Length: 301
Image 1: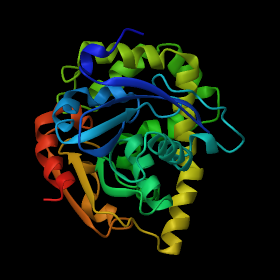
Image 2: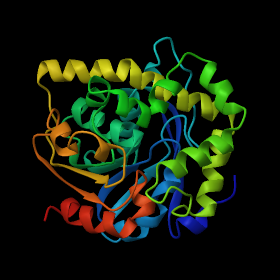
Image 3: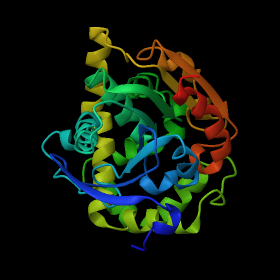
């Protein structure tokens, strides 16, 4: 893969050993710690348009999740548990502790937001504030799935199929699948929001069989163990103790179902939120609007 220094000027690069394997991360900025977690089918690179501004007020830690980007891909296990959001969240706690941060703010997009709210539920007191970008909880997604939603998020069931079906189907044309998928989820329905250098990284990852398998394992976990964890928390009445901000694209995935704010009430009693003019990839499609929305929240204003 090509060097990414030009996308993260002034940031350091580290590897941190965790029980999930070696985690790659970028670190930079000054101020209170803010963990940024990416989603599918991307990597830490997705934050490059907002990182410089966020780093003016925060010490940023920007890792690749297990199985993504340059982080290690754990063995799949017998029940997809190594790719559960619980396991990913635990690995992120290890990373932050290694760097000296016992508690911190977190902003996550897509799968990273799922790991983020799971971290808040499993490790109460760790998160000062939580920002979730363009998702609703896994519980809501599966339990409210109807025809329209199933067609919209066809990849949820496709990637969760037993191996090697999705790996074989996507692996025959991985870059085509990635380009088509990402373009179809933007507001503009094309790849114009994405830096070509970032797209090169996304294509390289999905073209690697171990990365592609990890992405499928992520969704297999989402359809099984992640859902079970959400259901158990809901039954026990566990909710997020930290202030939470839900931000979504006006043309994104959550906007086409029930109100995202209503959906988040199952887990987030201290909730604010807003939409921005974008599709799913809000941090790359509308970085200015995202910053304008989240910076005051992260500052506690």
